Amino acid sequence: MRRSETRWMTSSETLLARASTGERRRSAGRRRPGDGATEGDGRDDGEGWWRRGTREAAAARSRKDGSMRGTSERWRRGRSRARWIALVALAWTLGPFARKVVDGFTKVYVRRWMYPIERPIPCGMDAAVPSGLVDREPLSGLPPADMTNLPGLRPKKLKGGIISLCDSGVEAICAQSTANKQAYADIHGYDLIVDEDIVDRSRPTSWSKLLAMRKYLPEYDFLFYMDIDTIVMNPEKRLEDIVDFNFDQVLAADKNGVNCGMWMVRNTPWMLWFVDELWAQEQLVAPKNVWNMLFKYEQRAFHHLYASQIWRKVVKGPIYPKANTVRARTKVVNACVFNSQPAFYEPGDFVVHLAGLKGTVKCMWFSHYYKQALKTIRKKGIISPDADLPPPSLWTCLTKNT
Image (cartoon, rainbow, N blue to C red; front, side, top):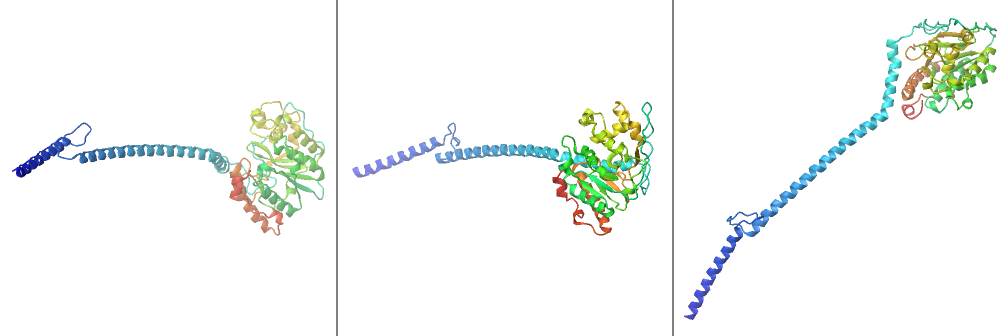
């Protein structure tokens, strides 16, 4: 009896325990704030925590995705700014070069097409300057020209030389330009003078052509000054065919009037005085913005003493008192005689002058013409090693001054 009662009691307790367990499970299934389970969904407590973990993981992924999107957006904006900075830096670096390219194209091709200069083809060594480019008539209100010792006597045998100047500002073309002139001088027996020590650093280099001319002219019957950016293209031409004993000096004229980048000078007392007078024009050494002029350096002195039409028109200053003498003793010829610029250069011309071109563009044009000239000079026969140099390379043109 007692044994069966004990068994019943055990069964009852078992039923009560099971009922209590089910109640706890149902209670756990009810949704509490923040729980992931729905009330009465029958899921156990572990499943609710799993859902909460899933939501939290999804939220973390969302935050991570948002952070990645923000990082990507910042990266994209940074790349955009870097791209603009690179473009500005490239424009800053290449802008001057591009400007020089456009300027060079204009001076070589646009001038040829739109502003041609009247010239004969072929160009004789005594070709007249086109009308309107230069005025040679005496100026009223000034003393008459002093023509003492003109015309001069022509010696049976002339001693002539060529002068040029080089400095660090033209290092890209200096050696080749000197070699070209040396080869030409060797063909005809002229002396070539390149005196770097004579350059006066207190003035722009081109003023020192006057010092060189004054120093060496007494030793010769005539001297021919050539800018370093010039190339002898036709070695058949002779300087003796340019010098004129009816005048003291010979200049060529372009659209701006007389140009002293190429200058034929005779050894006469008046010429030595005139060179000193040119150097004495210290007031013209000032920067260009002081003078409302188209010219630089010693070119101003030539136009001032010559009293050229453009000088009188633009500067409007006092006229040089001895201008009539300067005009009468100066022969002016067509630029094609010895000062052809690329805009009107024609094959067969004596010299090409790269006046107005700048920097890398000038160097590349120099290399172009130098190749042609070297080929022509080699056909003349033996050329000395000092005068047989290769043209400037592209790297030289890009990295050195011209």
